[in-house]
Length: 145
Image 1 (spheres, rainbow, N blue to C red):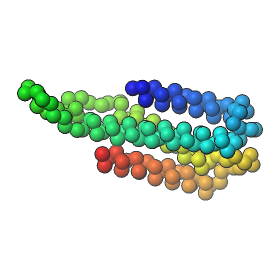
Image 2: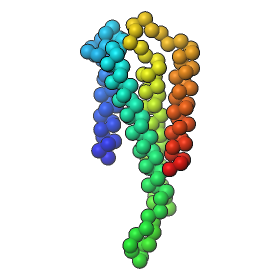
Image 3: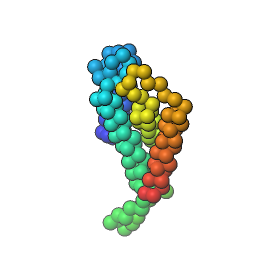
């Protein structure tokens, strides 16, 4: 739970970081454009959040469908999936993972430290393809657990 609280706080901080950049209050940006350090920090934070969400998704699947043996004659083994239903937890984690991946890819490929930069259709296509590859790798990681 503490990691979830940290991730939520960090996501809110990043929203204010990007907002401050847009309104020219960010010391790591000038005229609405990130400096090299500002972009590097932003990309690193979104990468860590993306990987963190992916780890949470993989651990959730692993814990939910594993069979645990107990040293108890009354309940020798237990499988959580047979006793509980996750109606909202896992879909919310997937949405968070996808959102963090989208922010990471957008920050990495669609922003620049050059003030005259404008993303072209090719760059946007590359970003969509990178996001699709990230989602497929995330699905493969979750299924392989």
